[in-house]
Image 1 (cartoon, rainbow, N blue to C red):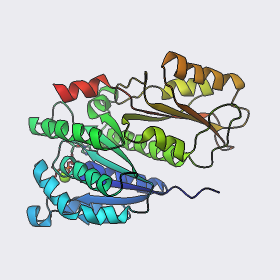
Image 2 (cartoon, rainbow, N blue to C red; image 1 turned 90 degrees about the horizontal axis):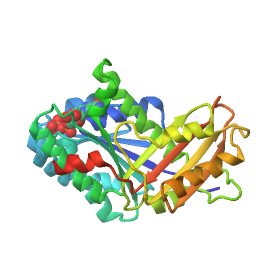
Image 3 (spheres, helix red, strand yellow; image 1 turned 135 degrees about the horizontal axis):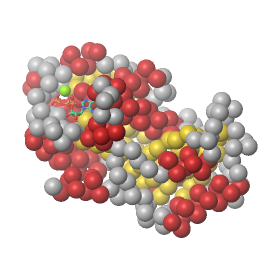
Length: 318
Ligand SMILES: Nc1nc2c(ncn2[C@@H]2O[C@H](COP(=O)(O)OP(=O)(O)OP(=O)(O)O)[C@@H](O)[C@H]2O)c(=O)[nH]1
Ligand SMILES: [Mg+2]
């Protein structure tokens, strides 16, 4: 029996803390750590551990959008988090780019973790502010995003504007929960890379093979979709709703299917593999199957690393 996969999830700033509260409520088996300069935001957050940073700089309040304060605040105390995550195999960082605590703190924390543990898998989940937010927020987000993509192993980007476009009449807090759900599904997809049943005749996935395609890979896509058939769930999972992603020629991909033993047909693997290798030119593809008697229809988890995104490129360049 392989060792249990230990994942630390660190939320930084308002958005990071909101995501942790959602993750904690769902009972996902990960360790959660919330960090902010803002003591009132921290006090209402639900997570296993909390760390107030920059008390000398903000007196327990927000950075008021000043990224430099977020950076300095994290620089002073990042060592505490580095120690805490020492026994984890994966560290996931979540923040909303644009403010000071998240944008400044996120970059410093990834740097500190990677400096001490270069082989630990660091995955960043970030949101891009609405176009209508202040120029300061957009600039903070641009600066932080380019560094985060460079230094994290995998960066998953969600555009808040796409949330508004797709769910225009939903109250903001409800719309935000949709993105929290996406992160929760992604965490479950990563945790799910354990105890996968091998499918004869294909290259089977486990955590280490995923790690090999994920280390230092750049932008990533993690999607989980359920549908009436394996193929239709797979097709859905190829598309990212909150960022335009192109998987053509990407570094690697993992596809695993959960469902009843009869849900998976021989032709499904053949079709999925053909699409990924021939249509999209992905060289390294891993498969897996997890029997489940609870699911009424098949569920497909799709992870692609080293992908391209035109909107991320534009956002960084404009
Ligand atoms: N999707 C989503 N986006 C959020 C949420 N909260 C804030 N945001 C976005 O994230 C950006 C940063 O906001 P916060 O996380 O509150 O900022 P912060 O990191 O706490 O920074 P300061 O308060 O300036 O120190 C905002 O401009 C919004 O675009 C949330 O719960 N969900
Ligand atoms: Mg804040």
